[in-house]
Length: 81
Image (cartoon, rainbow, N blue to C red; front, side):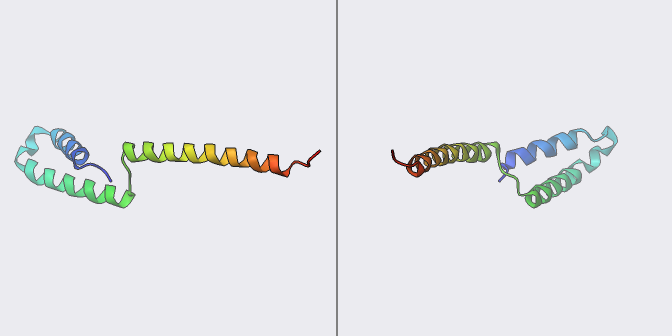
């Protein structure tokens, strides 16, 4: 799940990019931007970099264990002399 601070930063950047003539609509635009960003990111089902890194590490450890097990099975499958 994305951190609320990330959406706030994007909202601020979008609002700051509005031309000066839109200053009176700034508050409404900010609310609209925030809602659109929250809805869009919720649909995308994104994860944070931390969650991604944790899962990458878990996958790497799992691969190492799998490779070790494959080697053990290969040794057991070799005909005895």
